[in-house]
Length: 560
Image (cartoon, rainbow, N blue to C red; front, side, top):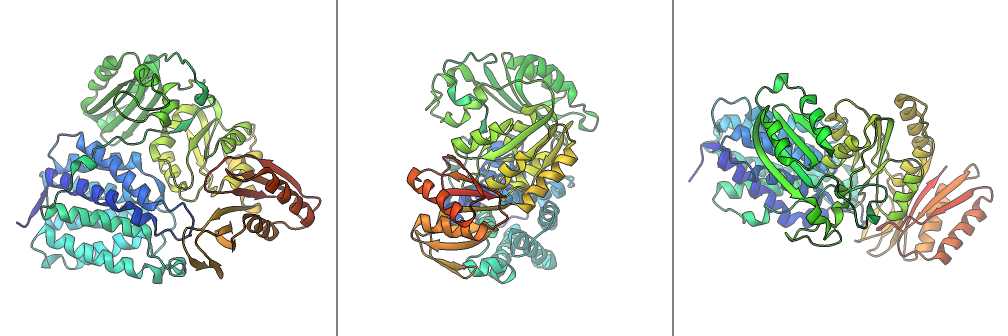
């Protein structure tokens, strides 16, 4: 049976099916990583982004496609992880922008095609410097194809089949558009993940509904690392109920967010209040969840509600709670730190106990757990920005795949000046923090810190997960590889040889200090030999070693 229109219920089935299909195949997408290192996470980021949206949609009972697409868009926006996840969330935001213009509860063929066009246009606007040969090209050429041939289609299935066919054709040619893909011998991973979503949506149209049990699952909680949070012991939880809800506002154009934020600040802590047109999303820890909900009802209709008893969860803080959900990563949610308003709040992304400690010692207020293999969602950044409670906030993403997520969070923040430094490695973030001046303006700090980033050198040593050839270097599966300036400098079987070759390419007679973050599994003897090697290259170069305890990377190096 062919569909002439897409109702809200059908659209919900389509996006849920698409999310599940991607989830079931996300490892395949992860393996398309350009670099042969164990951090291929595009598929993981995209499926977690989609599942965040599906979770919100599954809790909504509306059959209006406008409502469904709006809630999906908001869920994706808050759950977006990594560059591809952010672009994906913006694609569906573009869909909603077009769907919101219709006057009935379903989409016609022509309106669906226009929504697909709006999706690609919004995705392009989300990226400052769009790069062809990526997911952006896939969504654009697919939409342009169906727009050009729109008079040919007699059903929604026809449209999506043609859209999918063009998406696959475009994906195949992405290596010709982006040389780094061709050199690595892979197609664009973001485009491949997007195709999995479209395939799942088409399956739903044709009656092949995947198990919704796979889709409606517990999403990872925010993973903000507060000082001392891992040594809580018997914590007295002042506000016992983690309360979250979404409200559809009655009069969103005249709504004053402070009319909700101010009273809730008096009722609890760990408060996050975010608006998106007529949607209000609130997260608060309070002893009066009913009062919070009653307050919200003054301004709109409650769409979703979630209330958890944190005292019960705290009894199982290191493992499973009574519901069977793992809350070991959500410890900071149990003991939020309420601090007075300050001039500056500093947020950094990092992984590894020693890495986090090093950033805290430099004055970072909050660490968001993440990096390679695990990119935090937009909502983690929004919660962190709220929690530091500062007039000016500086974020150090410390990973090229997290910058766009941080920038999206900054764009959603009100009443605070938020600057996202484009730090692509932990080494860059660490060097930038050393130059932070609390007496300077945020503009002055941003300029000075980025000057440091641009002038210093950073590098990492990790291991290869497949055979390849990149930048003229032959790489074998299992080799240790040294990377600097997004290029593979060396690949060899011996880790000491890899790190010394990398250091030799980075340290010159003008180098003054080399900072080495030591990863898990590296012996003290090896570290001593590496320090001696640096002295043999430049005896005046000071070496600082930090036991970073990070995974994936044996060494993270900063040279100034």
